[in-house]
Length: 469
Image (cartoon, rainbow, N blue to C red; front, top):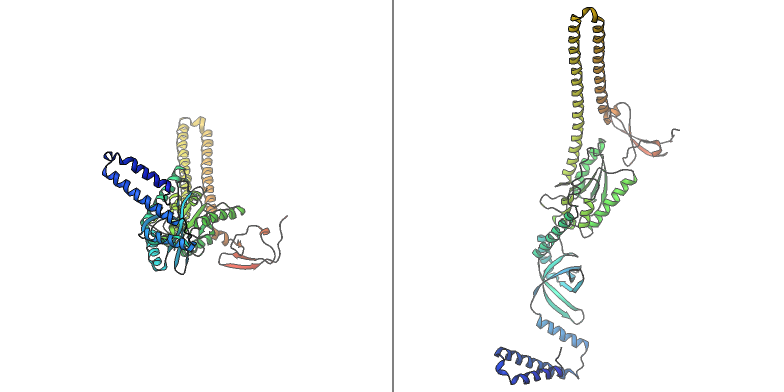
């Protein structure tokens, strides 16, 4: 801003007042005062010359463009947050901003990355950070200032330092971890016990992911045996909208099961087949908090062995791939079956022990009775027979009860197997979508049903439905 005549007079007066005391001023102070006086005089002369000058807006902005071009011709490194990003014709356009500690924007401007350098700089950034430039990222740009009379002020992006963004992302990751830890969420889901019997699993995955196909192939085989049932909800796992879509899939998936009266024993989140760079989109506090607060264990298989995301940190169990998740479920079901078999063997063992104890006790009692009979043959013959018969009957009863109990347990275990049920002439009735029917009121005339028999399946059409009184 030009120095007015009043300011110039103040400087001249100051110089005059100090001329009598030059001995008290150092040479540097005198040089500074002379420089300020010269600048003030020059500005005053320029201001006086411009008093009667009228410029067009174009001329004035052209002068501003010239000043900015000459003053800020060199490039500098500037850190800024990306508020928006668009591209057209190979050029990339950004809205850059700086915020204070309260998140209030304190400065903003446009940033242009021209086509000639865009592919190289964006490729370097994506290779080193694992993600593309997007809204919300803090980035260190090398820029030069530019001003156009028609389009206004902007900075031209000449280079990008990916290491700054990596450090910022790592800092955000640690901050989210600390917040989850402080709020008691980091190990909340991991503290849940693994369910003894897994009967229903809710799966969250991208709809057409390669990992989902591998998972579903094995899951369908488990469903065919009747061991476990799977329900699926889909969401995208890449892009800025990924966290919100996954959260919504979890909520809607659970509500859909709740409407059917089903509470899943396990929540599975799998990805598989995506780029490593897309993992960064899953580092979202709200998503991690929702997963941590689930009332059932959450198993995740994001699809990369080395890289970890927040979901891995808060989940009950982490697997490298979706295939390992379904393998873990199958292994758990197998272990449950083995535990049932071991329980049966243990019951048999206990029954045998009880029988042996009864037999031993009987023999001991018999010997005691015989010894007493020898001593008191005249007085206890009748009592001896009675005691012997009583003990013998008790032993046989114990044996019969133990055997009957053992047989019942074995029958319960084997009769519950679907193959044995089908072998007896029963059939499993399923609707077109594969759900098992247990009541006649679940169907209607002209409905197609599938009957699973011992050696195959029948497809039938319902002619009529008659309900029991």
